[in-house]
Amino acid sequence: MATERRAAASIEELFRKQAARDRAVRNAYLLVDAEARGLHLELAEGETAGQPADPAQPSYMASVGKLFTAALVGMLHDEGAVSLDDPITEHLDRELTDGLHVADGEDHTGKIQVKHLLAQTSGLPDDFEPLLERLLQSPDPGLTPRGAVLWAKENRTPLFPPGEGFHYTDTNYHLLGFIVERATGLAFYEALRQRIFEPLGMTRSSMLGFSEPAEAAPEPTADAYIRGTRVNDLAGYAALDYAGGGVVAPMGDLLTFMKALVSHRIVTAATLERMRSDSRKKHLGIRYGYGIWEIVPVPVIMPARLSCWGVLGITGAFMFYHPRLEAHFIGTFNDSAWEQKAVRFLMRLITVVDKG
Image (cartoon, rainbow, N blue to C red; front, side, top):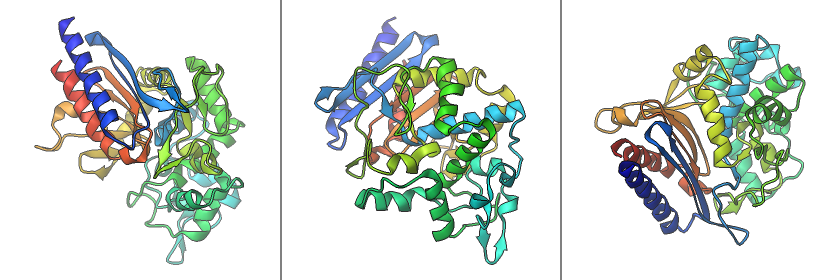
């Protein structure tokens, strides 16, 4: 027990110092769960709307939501409703697909498969970053997820033929959201609720701007900031994010999701393995699968003891599982200043738990 207490104290000190010393951080949340080691911590720091941050408070998790989108598609694949190898033209209407991927006079749209969207290898341009810059300057209550994709189709050029490169883009995940809608007959946020939130008992989880949790939290959703702007209710932002990362949840609900995913209660073991292994290099020491970031060993820079997998978000949000430690690391600093720093913080957390 002394070892667990020391690890818990070290984690709490690390977290609170990081949150307190960074002026960009208005609030921050952390959950560390290593059941086999008798370690479970839920921490919060800062405030929202004048109220002290609470560990049970829901947070907008940005691109962490991509793993939920990938999981829904994986479920449909397991059910036989959508194959990961299907051309997307089988599951999307012609307004979206006509001329979607035209480069150098050649139309590659028919070559895009569902797996290319999941793995960010479709070659399609991004709709999130350019439209985000516009929204930060001029909020747009009329923006829709479909409108964002159509804007990218009309105003941006594809980067490479499907399967021949890697480019991280929310356009891919918006299209996956539409595939989920067509296959289930439900709005994407309803598919999330009926297929993931409700079965897992994630009663305080919802989708930013589109749904409410089954059980209202006594605390407000934590403030989240991108480049100095609070985005919780920024007009048009929820539509821009959508299936690219609109999940709002407390850390405890996210742990429930990850434990279900790891134990193959959401997708089969074979599908999860494919989601992880069919990956491309994103950065040095990081590979990207189907909505999954995999931290992989790099001599000297990234030792094998740090190997884990999960997902990151622009607001410094993270949700990772460490197989060897059987540990979950979930949290957010709710500010885009932490988009890169969250990975380094995660590495420090893993080191503390590993050393005890």
